Image 1 (cartoon, one colour):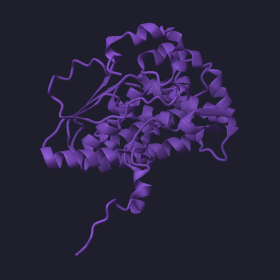
Image 2 (cartoon, one colour):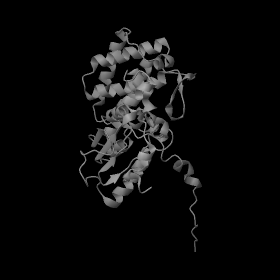
Image 3 (tube, one colour):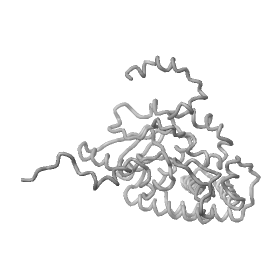
Image 4 (cartoon, one colour):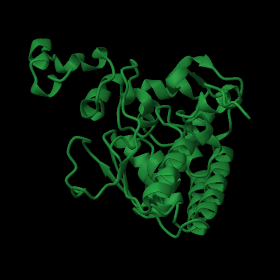
Length: 315
């Protein structure tokens, strides 16, 4: 007779489980790896939750009210599952929306990318005055190349899916092309330099090749995206009908002192959406749940008024 242990042996699964809620392993997965978002979470964990739920319940529609860079929605697409997502950070929502265009023709992506590079190589340096953060993070030659690619994209931007995808490709290569180091949570550190960088045109060509290959791989699993992504408030999205969602899978903001608005300050500065750290409040932070009282200071919130709110009575 075999006696079962009272407690399971966790040693064999410790390494996998200790990272099961993180974005780390996503950087090996098609589509997910197009942009490293520090606040993301594990696609493999989402897939396992969905697989268990489908095995028990059958067909399912899911929702992620804090969609971030699209992890939950992309997993659902790969499994042929309809999904809804809501993301309040406008720039992060744009990244997620671009990823969800994986069903676009890879040939169109490559053609648009090649056209963009050819035009950029012939182009001249623009007269744009970038925020100081950008000048601190790039040497002159690198910034000139990135600026030409950006100007080329702006000229070619026709609102097509291919154009949105090459926008993401250019956005994704900014950090690999920069000398600046990054801290935990991907905060940019201009005063710390990396050992190596990738020349922008090389990085862009490699990114287009990667994205094209990933799109073709995903297209072998599904014909089109079934995701609906909303840029808005997770407390109120009437586009989703009552009782139309079977399962909610999400990774909400935590009380971890992480500035979610600052996650893409570097990229937003390059695209001239902000000119300084202070601009983040009006552009992004006021739409988000703050994870620290430091980030709520601009609102001058009154503690006594907040504590009297009916919504927090249970706690």
